[in-house]
Picture (cartoon, rainbow, N blue to C red):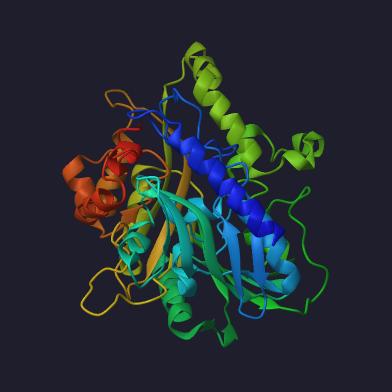
Length: 461
């Protein structure tokens, strides 16, 4: 009961802080961490008070559900569920992603090939709307349209204060098979087999992702949850680096906890930009700072002060364009996109994460989640690439990202909106359910107090 009372007080504090924001001023959450790569204008008023909305309210091990506050990180959520032998159906790869953030801004991980995206496991949600009302949404019922439109709305329709999610069993360990492919078509065929059978080569698969180092060298990592471990589990929080192990090991085993955060220690491979993968630096770099949120603080510092950019100019190096994106490409066209990307962008490695919508669209509906309209029954591959490229003579900052957006559309894909986007409004509305968004916006935020979706994603408001 104490947790319930504390939650009610936290919601009251949020509502009071919302009411205190003057009309016409930008409404933002007062967050300590962020996994966004969209530059934003500086707020002129304090952010919304979400300090009391960071916890797990309840884990029902029998029903396999959890009631979680909207600002709870997946790190804290996993700490609460693993002692019960349970995990969220999808655990995004970075520790400080919040549950509310993964639902309103999308998330993905290696269980997505059969569990879809995080919002698909939400059975109930309390939302503070732009009208200042606190309402409860469910997949069916009075507020079902808000429930369906909330994913990928990026806070433009409201903020989740509590979410009830489904959980799934997980073993104490995760056994891994690292399978190398020299042809992308063979990689795609293997993904299709796992999606269709839930197994590969006769062995069950509970989770699946991969890495492409080049079109001629890619790896599919097939994971099986188990309570048995053959040998001592590997540890990639010390001197060893996880993504490099794919080239050295065909079999591996991790604890369930270390598997869920295997990418966080080195921010996939992006820690190399800070020298953390150099053996000497790694021994000196405190282990508590080998995590994605600390690296993100360094990136935000660079964005503000442009230290590296000034050094590059002093050394006569070209300016660089940030290319930080996750895109979903239909499985059949994944080789085409990856070869184009290798030839025209040239960044490596890239992350590969297959996904399918968990549930089909309802009767008479062609799209289950209108603001990110992946097709029911279609298998996609999330392709993640995070870095920068030199701006070539005669080119402008943003040109490479625009080319990627065009190729994503050409191959029938979509891209997430946590980073830079360059679509014009007509294209954006077509790709991200603009008509549905406006209808829901007018109902739940009639005075448009919350910043619009296009303004957040493209105009950087």
